[in-house]
Each structure stands twice: as C-alpha cells, then as structure tokens.
Image 1 (cartoon, rainbow, N blue to C red):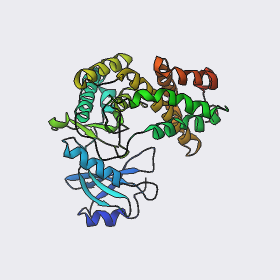
Image 2 (cartoon, one colour):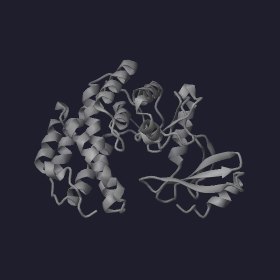
Image 3 (tube, one colour):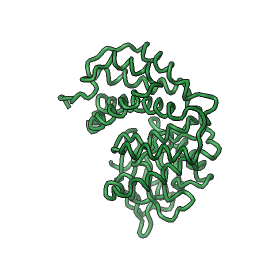
Image 4 (tube, rainbow, N blue to C red):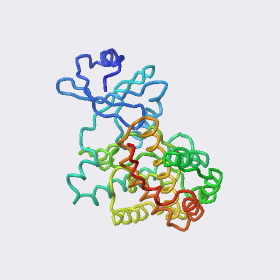
Length: 326
C-alpha cells in the first residue's frame, strides 16, 4: 500500500499539498484507496492505475447518482492520465462492521438498503451498456474456467452454456423493467452517513461497473452477500419489502433465483482466480458460503437445466473442497 508516485504532485495541484497519505484499503481489482489527512479535513484518494483500471466510468456513474439525489462520493479532483481521483470521505461506518457490532439492527438497516434500491429503480437508468446475454454467459463461464481445473475436474463447457441459455429468458422478459444495476451492492460497499435523508443515510461505493439490467440483480447482491451471512428470514422479508415498494413486473422470483445462481457462479470463478492466479488466499474462505448460496438458488424450478449440469459435472464433494494446499 505504498502511495502511487504521482500522488504528491496531484494532491498539491488539488490544494492538499501538506496532507498525509495513509493506507485505507485495497480490493479484488487493481484499485487501491488511501485516506488523505490535512489538518481539520480529510478525503479519500482512489488509485485506479492505467492500463488495468479506468476511473472514467466511476466519475460518470457518480455524477448520475448524485444528480438523482443519491449519495455517491463528491469528486474533488482527478488526474485521468495517472488514474487518480480525490473523493469525498464518507467516514468509517460501513454497513458490514456496523451490523457486526449491532446485529439487532440488521432488519432495519437492510430495509433501508432495499428501499434505496426501490428508489433507484424508480429513476431513469444511467447511460451505460446493457447487461445482456453475452455478459451473463461470460461471467457464469468463470466457474468452469477457473474452479473446475482447481479441483481437478474436466467439465462439459458447451452443455454449461446451453443450460444457461435455457434459463436466462426469464431475466430478459419484456415485462421486466430495465434499471441501473450497480453490480456490487452489498454491506461492504454501503456506508452509513447521517444527515443524508434523501439517500436514506446510505453512501454508495464501488459502482464503476454499472450496467442497465434486471432489478433483481442488486437485490441478490445485497441479500446473497459473498462476504457475510444474511439470514434466510431476512432475505425473505427484504424480497417481500422490495416487491411491496416496487411492484416489479414479470416472474420476479424466478429472475431473482436465476440471477442469484449466475452471480454466485461468477463469484466462485472470480474468487478461485484470485487464489490461483493472484495468490490471494483469503478469498478461499468465502467459497463455502458461495456454494451454499448457489445450491440454494439451484433448487428453484426455473434453474432445472443448470441444476442438472451441476449434478452431472461437479460432484457434491468437489463443491466444498477444503483446498489442503493453500
């Protein structure tokens, strides 16, 4: 977490020349974050180094969200050549840690987060590409590409793609509205920021990969969280809460299950890649939760073709593998 070489000059140009640069966080991508302290003020420095990262989509979506009254970090300065963005600091109260310390508030906090999604879905979507069949297929394919060889399996890739084609129609029904999908909407990317009543006191992070897609996707991202256990009773209650607010059209429950399975398959592939390619062993700890969630989604009748593929190609003992060589 050494600050990028271009950071001091960038901060000086932005009027923060005397600020301290302190490590804040990294994530699963090449992006890194630093907290900038300057006497009585502070900000966050995003390091999105080219050519691996491009901060422009983040700037575009941040502008879209704030224009609709949602709390995305204000952009204080940016240097696109070096991939540096100075952001408003939302503080340290992430939903994840807050609920770890106050589990009795889980229902109320998730209710606010779901209400915010309903608010977002009532607004015109951002000018971003469509979350289409090709993207769904490429993402789902990360599981056989990375997980299968990691556990010593050779699987039928063509049958896997065919199975997903058979179930994705429900996500693309004409009745389903098209909304801004943030794609990583979960407890570690939502901040509690008192005083932002219009945004329900919730600050949004990590939305640079937003697309236009089905409204169930971000609900799945929130309620089938890769990094924390959300009780099934809370998930059920929050789905009902969203449906009461948004009155979604189409076969919403089936779409929720299909997108849950698609997302969880994608994440299993990504987390395996982070382990095998990038040496980030901590992501192995999330795999048992991801398999539990995926198997639960696969029980929905709408996923019968995909469920049959998993039964044939990935035996149960290979789904919760201990990875003794970690």
